[in-house]
Image 1 (cartoon, rainbow, N blue to C red):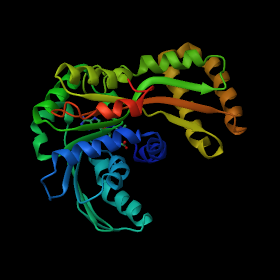
Image 2 (tube, protein in one colour):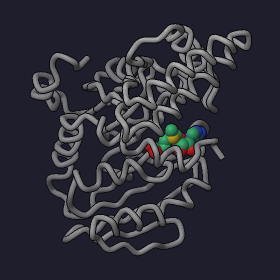
Image 3 (cartoon, rainbow, N blue to C red):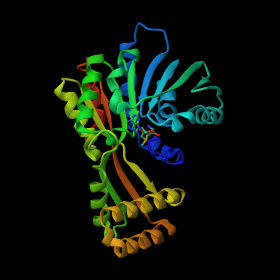
Image 4 (cartoon, rainbow, N blue to C red):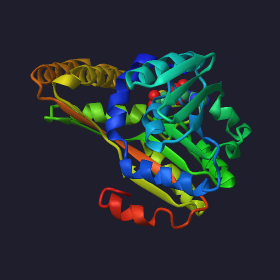
Length: 311
Ligand SMILES: C[S@@+](CC[C@H](N)C(=O)[O-])C[C@H]1O[C@@H](n2cnc3c(N)ncnc32)[C@H](O)[C@@H]1O
């Protein structure tokens, strides 16, 4: 078990979906097509830290054609939920799905998508995975868990295999509540302190992971593009998510500063009132990263599309 709750992954999926960078997803699809121009077999994708397959649900319809996904995760309990969650999703889209032990097959119009799951500890066993088995690598909401050392290994693994990567929804440390309230800074500081802990990969890079991976890849002469993919949470329909974020903020701040209880209780009361009246909004900064090893000019046209927010 990794400690990630399937209901939490389901709650965040809608916000992830809205936040993802479309230009980067399109450029990833183009990079895959360039690599595969001569192939007719299904597109093969590996999803690192795949959880309950949110990345598959976001990307499969966008990439189109026949696909074969391998979802790699440490947490067997999350992987066990993949077939039923994909089947429910496919059914809601009007597609057919057949569940099997450890996987699922979706018939989406003319396209057939096969999904299999594989338990693996990516901290220990990244290099045991042969990236060349896949046309491309994806990962979402995963990189902020890892260490600087693991990012360097990951960059080397990717560049040696010459495979494109789309890494979405990595938190980047920006987090702003609106309207402002007393002790927002206390909450923000605690959050940043908390993010640096060990999540099974050694001291985690936390909010610097997107930029740190970009540096590792560029050091290996790999083209990289970054784009903001921020969660925008606000309005009546989002009150459950805002409450969850406010509760989490208080719990994290209390872990960091046990003496701040009264101030945090006041902060929570203010947010409770603002959430109830539909006033509260929260932006949580994330970044998407596209890497295209071995395709030197593949990102040139993207730079203009992404300006000015691209880094
Ligand atoms: C924030 S969740 C994201 C899950 C999924 N990508 C999504 O967006 O819904 C992080 C995922 O990383 C997985 N994970 C954490 N440590 C891991 C490890 N050492 N090896 C493989 N997966 C790991 C967790 O089990 C979890 O599914």
